Length: 120
Image (tube, rainbow, N blue to C red; front, top):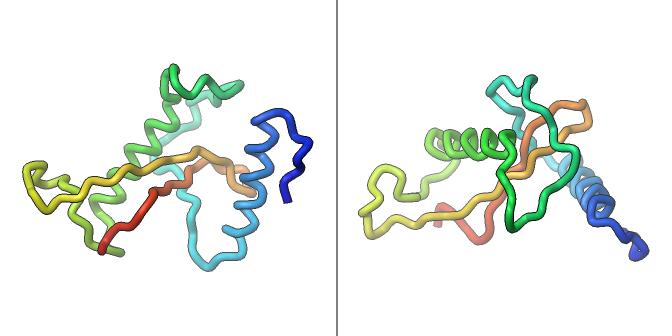
């Protein structure tokens, strides 16, 4: 349960992630994706930036790139994102989000998600 006395967004985010992490660990599905690229030389940010005016962090860009590659090559479902033919009238684009996280083993990776449905 979230503590209603929390005043700092950073603390609220940490607690939210902790609660979500419990759900992930109890699930048979794997949501955490480790980076394929070498990221050792990329420095982590000291704090979050203002969400409406900022430069996207290199790790978030790398996570987005890796997710795009995964979506192009995965075989779990079929969905016409319009990647192969942007003029295709049946293409249904989709907006995905990534969240760079550190797992319980200390490895950096990312979670990805979207709203709505795919492959329908």
